[in-house]
Length: 385
Ligand code: AMP
Ligand code: GLY
Image (tube, rainbow, N blue to C red):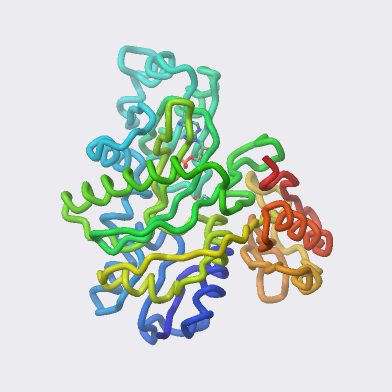
């Protein structure tokens, strides 16, 4: 099978690496028309309808159409689907610019924020994982909401607390199978300090989460049924972003693609054929049950100077080969060009597999000691708790 992967980040490098175990992965420059199966990595082309256009040309595509991709393209719509499907989620309201104008008056944003113990303010439009502001300070929340609503609608929802869990479901329109779970670290700094990012590191498996995974399966099942009820034939990843609150798991959000950097730790653990699975999902066939090694996998994101606020690019990167010489280590290339200069915020994903999480961690951090570039920063506490 000839497979083309759309996208150039660390997630897509991991997809290509694992797919190439069993399929012929076409290089970036090959026309997707030459592929038997096209896999779309990032959310933006999905939201823009790339899967629909390719399917109209007769291509087999792994990735939802623009209808299903609205789960990620509009948080307001996603919340409507969650509520209709009976999936437990944070209490919320969506405000348009007109409604926000009533900020000081009845029914406005200020009033809703005042009702909540703390809140998350989210853009109702795509913001590359960086559009969320979480705080318990009503004034800071209102200021953030007022700035965001200038550019489009915002969703304000109650603050939930607990560890997070990412569960990736592969869907063929009617059914789904779950891939191994992962935990992402979203804040830029150690101890979950600083602003949210696209993700600074991840690990899999996540000990002690079996009940939450069972709950997630029920939520995905209800969501897929609701999508079908709305006439949506969802073929792709339904990525459940859960928060494990003291009152039980709640769905924070759905994404419509593999998580980045979750894919970098989930996919290397698979012992079953990934290309076969994604092909079955793309054409609507029954899905083979994925299998995974008991080994643990961790990835640490090496980020560029200034990420996530204002990223500097063009810095020369050294030591990737030496890092990959460490046992069990693979370095996925994310924001780096062909000349090994930084070209994006998340530059490299240093990934290690080992029989235990502790050993995988030790391998990844040893590999990192070999890599240098000006302004490089990363979290020292991935998989530490
Ligand atoms: P989202 O893009 O909705 O996943 O939000 C990004 C991150 O913001 C999540 O992974 C959480 O860390 C945090 N977050 C989002 N919503 C909430 C919430 N209601 N309560 C607490 N944290 C949240
Ligand atoms: N790691 C979070 C995301 O992919 O959105």
